[in-house]
Structure formats: C-alpha cells, structure tokens
Length: 65
Image (cartoon, rainbow, N blue to C red; front, side, top):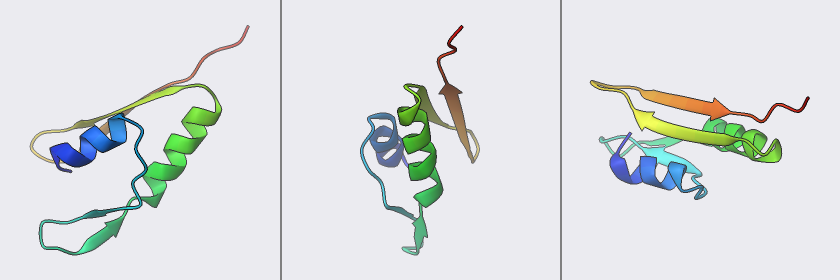
C-alpha cells in the first residue's frame, strides 16, 4: 500500500478502493467496514506499512468497567 493511501486511512478519509501498481482496482471495503466498527465503539485504528510488503493494523478499543 502506498504512502498516500496510508495517510488517507490514518486521517479517517473514506477509501472506496485501492489500485495495484498494474492499474487494476482492488476494493478496500473490508478496511472501510473495520474503520466504521472501530469508530462506532469510540476506538482508535492505525495503519502502517510492513516492509518488505504487507499492512499492519493496530486497533484500540475503550474498556468500560
């Protein structure tokens, strides 16, 4: 995933799809759904590039006692 896409994800911008370097479109619907679930629970989600390839996602949800 490119830096621009990671920045869009981490700033909470809506992403409907991503594009491969070949120009093919991949859908980012799963990421959008996860972002909506985390937001509904007042949580925090952070996306990071994993070298040499991949994506890591950190989710923090508040715990009510």
